[in-house]
Structure formats: C-alpha cells, structure tokens
Length: 404
Image (cartoon, rainbow, N blue to C red; front, top):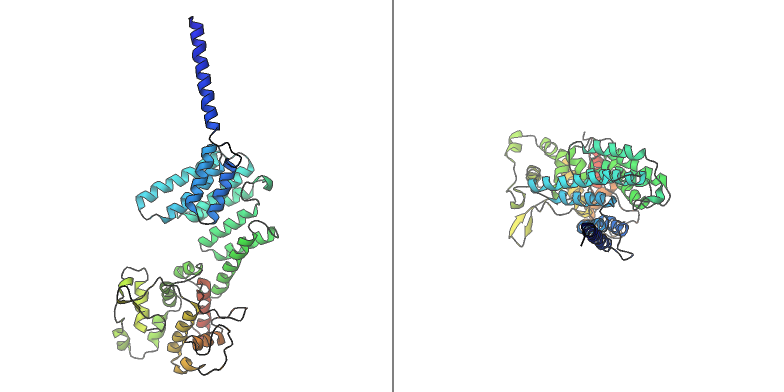
C-alpha cells in the first residue's frame, strides 16, 4: 500500500470518527420537546414556583442540548444564587458565589443581540437582588440602565415576553434594598406599561404590598429593624417584640409611668426562656417579659415541659389586638379599657362573637383606628399580621398617645 493511499485512509478514518462524534452529539436531544429553548422556559417557570433544584436541572439539560445556548447560563446563575443564599458555611458559600459570577460572565459573553443582552442584564439584576454583596444595589442600577438603552424586539424574548419585566425586577431589587418608595414607583411603571402583560398581576400584588409599607411609614422614622420587618408578609413574636422596643420605645415609656426610679431599676424578667438564649432579639424579649405584656407571655411547651417564649411563632391579628390593648392600658393606666366592650349582645364583625376572648381588644383597636377590619366586614382574628400592618398600627398608636 502506497504512502499516499495510507494517508488518505487515515484522514478518511478521522473524518468518519469526527462525523460520528458530531452525529452522537446532535443525537443528545432529538425529540421535538427535548431542546434548549423548552428546557430554559421550563427552568424559568420552575424558578417562579420556588423549585430551585428542578430549575437548575432544566438549565443544565438546556446546555447539554446546546452548550452555546447562552440564556441557560443566566438561568443557572439565578438558580445558583438562590442556593448560595441558603448556605451557612462561609468557605463553601464563597466557592458557590464565584460559580454564580462565572455563570453571569458566560451569559454576558455569549450575548450578541439586544434580546440576548436584555436577558443577561435581567439575570444580573436578579442575582444581585438574591445574593448579598458590596455595592449590589449600585451594580443592579447599572445593569438596569444598560438594559434600558437596548432596542428590544419583544417577540424575540424567550421568557420575559415584555420589556416591563425590567421594571418589575428592578422594583424587587429596590424592595430588597428597603428602598420602598422607589420600589413602588417601579411596580407602578409595570402597571402603566400594559393593561394585562405577563408581569401585570405580580406587579399589582407587589405594588399593593409596597404601598402599604409606604403608607405605614408615612410621618415616622423607622429604623433598620423596622424596615426589615416591614417587607414580611407575616411577623413573629420576636419581630413584634423588636418593633415594640425599637419603634415604640416601650421600656422608656413604661418606666416613665413609674415615679420611683429605684423601683424601675429592680424590675427584670422573672426568668430567661431557654429558646431565646441565642436569639437576635434576646434583650428586647427580656425587656418585654419584664413589663409582662399580655399576649407576649411565655408559653408552656409540652415537648420540653418548660415555659418558652417561642419567638418564631407567627402573630395573628387577634393576638396583635390583645397585645396592643395591654400596651394601651399600661400607657394610660386606664384599667376600664380592659372591660369597655364586655356585655355586648351583637358583634359588628361576623367572625368574632362578643364572648370571644379577643372581642374587647379588637373593639378597642378598631374603635381607635389602630387596627382595621377587612372590606368584607370581617376582622380575621386568625390571619397573620404583616410587617406593614404592624408598623401602621404602632404609628397610629404613637399618634393617639402623642408619642414622638
């Protein structure tokens, strides 16, 4: 066999092998629904539902089908950022954080069209909103401004479908940064952009929540603790304790009602519940226990056979009314408040009977506009109290008592 024929056969074998590899690679995803676009959309939908692991798997499958499908890197960055947020080990968290940044960088490098870049900048905004980091709001605003300059054809956007998505996620970024007025404005921009776009319903819900927060804080200066609690859909006993101490200055107010300072100095909590020893609001809880506020007493726990504070328990509206009623009684020294509405034959609220242990407290709070009933006419005593609602109640109580 001549040398030329041998070389030809070698090259032919190489070509056949390469073709086989190429064919094998293409064969990875051959069915109609097994394509990168489909897996990317499924991954983004999974993120909406909070299914981070499912989303991560879908983005990885999209890249398995086509390693150059850039949006999947942005999706992986968002999903991985959620995972980083849940990590507690600093070393492991640092490694995973760098992985997120690598995904973001890859999605940016592969972005060619304005639609590609739009997806990339949104992934930057979402990652910065999820993960803590230095100057994260500044970096988020920079990505937002760059995205605003793009000439995007909405018909070519895989998942977001409309450019108003940019305003929505920027609103979430401002909300996470506790910039409530700016967040409300961004959600309002979404509602003004389209009558019924993909992000309209979500923005409407977010606008209502943020508007309640802005309304609750109007006219008062809320500290960092209050701001962090304000965005919560439900507050805990620990949260409420912190609000009463930080925003209402309960310790100072109650102490001012006792004429003998030596008597105040001797006051302290009867004991320290075991479940608050390492709690972030331990001192605030001990202060509340010192003043024996009704509704915030220790609870007997059957499992441990001990009295615990249970700082993680969610506060219901009925409990909130009871707690604020006792604060009002202690501030005014008017014991008649505790029985003012007992003996009523009929309740103005269809879900509370006059014989309910919460009835008097609810009437005291609603008659003074410290708390409000629902438009349906119900009070919803078992519904959780939101952060905004608790701050609004404290704000009104402060105004009623001329506390500044």
